[in-house]
Length: 355
Ligand SMILES: *[C@@H]1O[C@H](CO)[C@@H](O)[C@H](O)[C@H]1NC(C)=O
Ligand SMILES: *[C@@H]1O[C@H](CO)[C@@H](O)[C@H](O)[C@H]1NC(C)=O
Image (tube, rainbow, N blue to C red; front, side, top):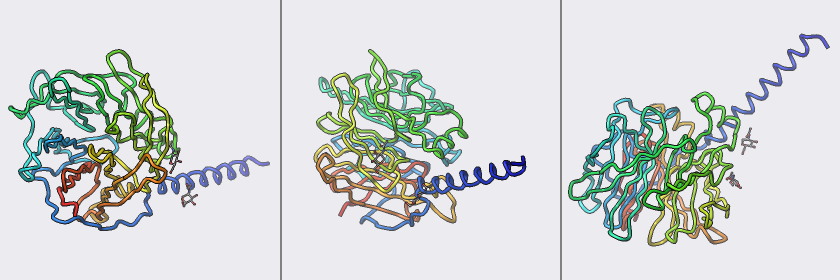
């Protein structure tokens, strides 16, 4: 064969490969999905939240922690966003206060992402664990919540090479947690390739002062993580695989796979209903639109409830959806009484009646 023929064949093969991967990327991001509107009654916007409410945690007595102002490489964000933790008393409406951060802590580079709460059963002390990305890096900061002062007392910063692209955490002790990594490679370009080539190199990491280990790998992108009310199972969203994994916690803190639930959406944070054990999940129905964030073709929102996840037939119900006219990029949903709080990656937050 002449050189020209070989070259032509190579070009055709390469073009076919690129074309195939572009279709795969549209499949992964569900670019073909039409956005729908399924609204809940009496929705109110949470005051002062315009640049994200990526994760929330609601305490039993109705106080909600909300992380806002995330600036995550590779995702849209408003340059004016300021990283803060807000506290919203769900009994008194939709007016959150900013929690003051005390002690030695750099608030100017605060870039909060996933959050989790650990309550010390012995004295009722509440500890807030925050995934933080100062200057794009990953660390976990632990704070003590001082309710009388609307303050967070910074206790500790945890950095570790295994905690390299942390998205979310679930606290399981005073200083221990499980964390998800949503990427494996370092630069934005390589991370795009990671998604495009569908590598499954992401993992869940267990951290405690006694040791740190990767306890479950094989995720294309591990995102939201949470724990069952009986503390026996973890739930992890593999956002690029459109699935939620159920993992059983072993005595040595390693995990074993129980099953995956197909979601048909790109699911972000997972909240677990303490009363019922139901999962509430904020998802991106069309992540192609989410990444583009085109004002003329807005990304949407979607919330699911999963009931009976441990049974043979988990019941997945779409509770809320929107075409972006009301809420863009829902990343979390949590029930309190008969109401639902819905947060977003880089947009607003809603508080709605469930029926
Ligand atoms: C994209 O999705 C369609 C429909 O599910 C499927 O038939 C096709 O094989 C997928 N293509 C790629 C490249 O993943
Ligand atoms: C991806 O999702 C499918 C179900 O949709 C599941 O069978 C498969 O195990 C999932 N892969 C991973 C790595 O979770």
